[in-house]
Length: 205
Image (spheres, helix red, strand yellow):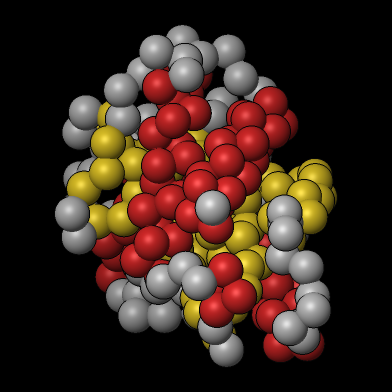
């Protein structure tokens, strides 16, 4: 069964996080999977094992401690975020497979625009050369996933300079605009969603 796709527009992080938790806690075996496509106002999120020292200085952006894996990352306008609310047990997908599926969708999206991207062992996400273009973090509860992937599209990247992105000091970040892909965040969200649906179908096939 194809996930329902919901475009939520620009929404605050905290209530969206709460909504993901509520959706996952109350879903049943019959609940359809959903993909939520959003942008967020500026916010840092710190994963479960996140170390506060990876936030290097206070530049007035709020930090929210959350329950995904990984360290600190930044969300802001011009970045598309896709949350994957999936019943992995029903889809018979293991967590590692889901991570690979998400990364492959981003790699395929960029390849369709002539850009070569890759994954790295032990450092989830997608990279173009030395720079990270997409970050991902998941939480699994009762065999179901939430949180997801963020792709830098056309945004102010300077807030990344105030953190060690994903816990890596000096990690460069890049966005599709720097690669001459003329996306808006909404268009990037639409196209990445199609690639995600395609990859999930292959896994289910």
